[in-house]
Image (cartoon, rainbow, N blue to C red; front, side, top):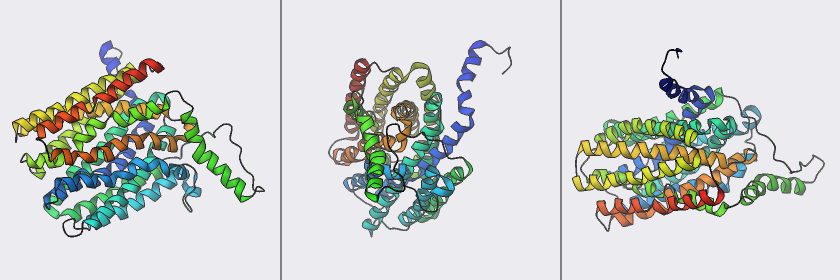
Length: 436
């Protein structure tokens, strides 16, 4: 930028310089690969189920297919330490596991699209669970790769790029899936999404394996040690050490509770947003245009702003500010429910919801990244993000039961209040543990 450029504009431009760094740009594409499968088992699938006449309660129960996102920390030590035969020696631990999960996702997405939820819901539910399992496993790998390949100063920007890439993937499988399903049917939509998993595979093949430091204080067995000694050493390093290190920190239980509650209000609203739009009279194309395509622009703005706020204000202030804004944004759904069918009102609602949601997610992901010890990245990040997913799946699965018994406006008012406990807990934690 020329030296004659005004100082304010130079500072504004310099704030975006970090987003042009190659390692940060890679995170954008990996975020796309992470976000692609999620909508196929949640938003897009819920619209498919609603279209063929599945009840609201049953649609909400399908959210339980996302259970692997909640419990992925249970097998994260395997992803962290166990080699994949034929892949780890050639590609490395992170890239080898990434290729394995992406191949499995291609198979699972094709199987999910080949089903008929009206005639054989068990087939649909099984493949939704299969896709969710391998998607959660891919998230373990990609989250670890992001934390290990970035410097700490890049965490905020990396989180923003991860959010943007994730939403791009969800737009591809959300809006793109709805367009394809409208004109060529649901199987074609899911088949194209399976092909797009090749983006993540290409990124992993073209980029290097990150360097990981060894954990301190752990002995390494030799080839002369017996198998029991080697197994015990592996369990100590892969399973016990990551959790033990985390549980030695002050306030670790409150940290997990905060992670569970911070996005709970958004999750509760999100699980029923598809049926809500349809009941308000919006078509699949209108939903795709406004909530997916236009929503992507709003998420882009929110994610970038959230990353800048995290870098400039620090974790504490960024989480509070973004948390309050994303809580208040749920009130826009209350207004939309009262107004009824209105494309302008839907557009305003999605603009507010996605900008604030992108801001909150960027600050939150940066916070989770900073919590991880780099020697145990995959296992610890899986534990932390599992608690976040718990609110999105198991707790939010009650949303359908609530929505069937009250008006939509009352339902979204409840989702607004559901965000308050997480904010109050963060204020307490920030003061007690002096979080900056």
